[in-house]
Length: 242
Ligand SMILES: [Mn+2]
Image 1 (cartoon, rainbow, N blue to C red):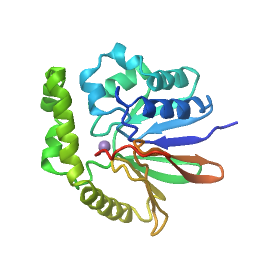
Image 2 (cartoon, rainbow, N blue to C red):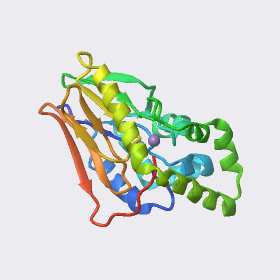
Image 3 (cartoon, protein in one colour):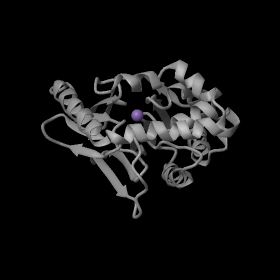
């Protein structure tokens, strides 16, 4: 019997967000060895990759559950986002994940999919591109904790100020991108923007997987088709930038 194929992105695991980790853990634990899970970027927040050791990462319950899912025979594939680009070696070596490079095309149950994280499609600001450089990654990793935490907050605040405009700008780019694939792809699957979106028309269908800060969202494909699941949290924590 063949299982289902699941897609999620932008969980943004971080040590100071244990509730997010618990929800992702519950999601990973309900998968069976017949299932496939494809993670479309930013499963870990920048903080995880730049400041935690491999041993610390392996202690994260939901990351350990991903490794367990893989060991049990589940199929795990990971695409990098702008936050976890530097964790690809970790995902491959410690979790046993297959690394996907964007844009990535696959066909599941007869549905032709295009996968991209979304930050490279042309809507991001130059200062954010610097934050994704190896130089900034190293710098942030070396910054003492008493400076790194306020810096992390300032960057989050600077991101938040333009959040809605930023989301709209990205969504417009995503829609144009999806339209450009008409006739070639059936479903364009994107992350990065933390708002879950499912626009079946015009074809191809555009699904923005959405962040896990304020809810749980994932796409599930089985023989019956592709279903987008969104479960908002009853209490909403503050918005967080992509
Ligand atoms: Mn992102």
